[in-house]
Length: 255
Image (tube, rainbow, N blue to C red; front, top):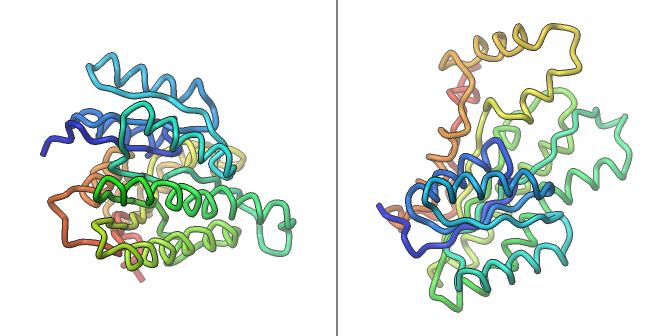
């Protein structure tokens, strides 16, 4: 389908899954607002979209800041007149065991990963109601279902996203606003690669182990998750809301 005349906001849009989502929507004709903490990264994505003939603007923001979120939503609407799809993808993922974690570290993960979703959803819903509808797609993680040692705050934040999304879907189901969650597994992104950079084992060997440990035989690519995000947002899926879509190469089905 064509996404012409549709406007999509993507947080964490400067790299990894967020970049792939932005590129995918723009390639289908949507106007994209790429949001990230580092302006140069989201500007590169916006420039790449423009070079390919698409429409995009880059906005720097701290997604955990209420003022920044309000500004992004206001500026996006000023630039394009509407907001059809909100993709909450920004996240941080420190690996700290519960008893080694300070309150500041905990709050940092929760505010960046979960409070940011609340802020953006709270901000875009009135816009969507006014224009007659819209779609929210929140990128969570398989850590919402099953986790690893050292991911207590990350797992809590990602499980919170799934619960929040279901609540939003129910709150606005009769007002033509749909909300769905995507749970990626291991995906070859800067976040995944940074998780192994401090280990003694060489990076290439670690990544080979990651590939071999997946039931499908490899980790995912950001573009594969972008396809699921677009599927979740598509008006062709007008009967799907409150859904949790797992895209993990079979990771969570293996005992």
